[in-house]
Length: 232
Image 1 (cartoon, helix red, strand yellow):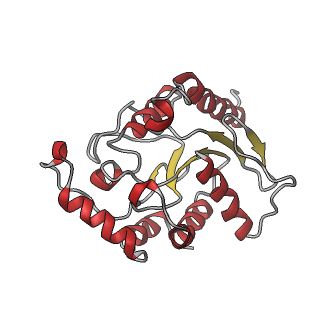
Image 2 (tube, rainbow, N blue to C red):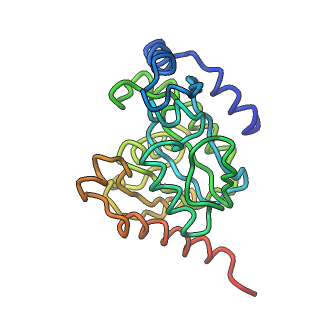
Image 3 (cartoon, helix red, strand yellow):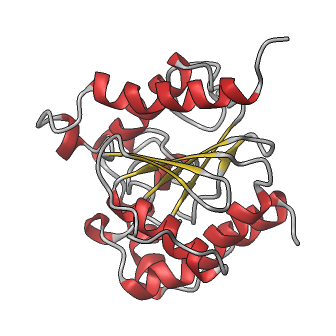
């Protein structure tokens, strides 16, 4: 099986979805006014974090002027502000902000991926685009051999996490786990699946997702990982 490094090179080089290629490159060329001085990344976004991670965080897709600009998942947008603040608060990141690839951010015992690796128009990937990126998600999860706790950000990530494991031959519990903020499922292959609303502005600005709600999911992840390593 290829390494995460090789996988991430394959992700970055992918041109499988013409609609996404056109969109990400157009955004990178036209830019947003406040980012005119930036040279946009404009390519698919690889995973980021600790290859020996026990915590895996799965999102939807890069933001057009976030990851598509900076080249790092959840970096340079409001969703990332929430995510990295929570990861720092619970000891998974060395700093609470993520602004660009050279900002010194490092993750400990945490790896972050996405169901689709290119910024999609309207933040809505098409079914065939999910399918094309599914192979990257499958390989990424296989290569994270120490993964024990999974936080899915939003229903789409939750559903695709389960779909990927089903396609990989795992038996999904019956009844099928249902998405909801704060729900937790211990799955037959050993993962603890935790679900959160996505920290999008649509959710955080309206109060559907509050900081305490978001922190509660990461607090549970922290407790579960600490249980794996009891103090001697």
